[in-house]
Length: 79
Image 1: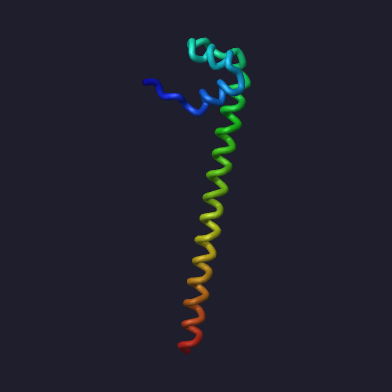
Image 2: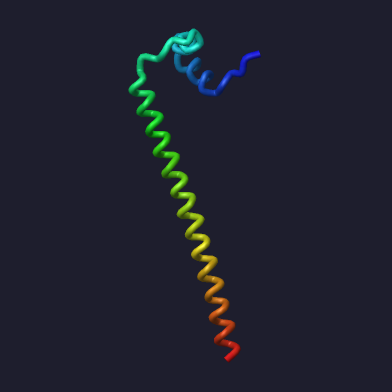
């Protein structure tokens, strides 16, 4: 039994003939467009990862600020 991938379903829904060509092992004629799309998605993935890391860094800085504030207030009240 063969596994059907989501991209294959997308190809079939977009163009049944393109799906059939792909099934026959024939290369696509729009290789430059496919390469451009791959490059775009790679860059977008990097940007999403960078955004997630920045958000995590922001939360860690806020946590550090809260801890330092608590320590500072504790030291001030103990004097």
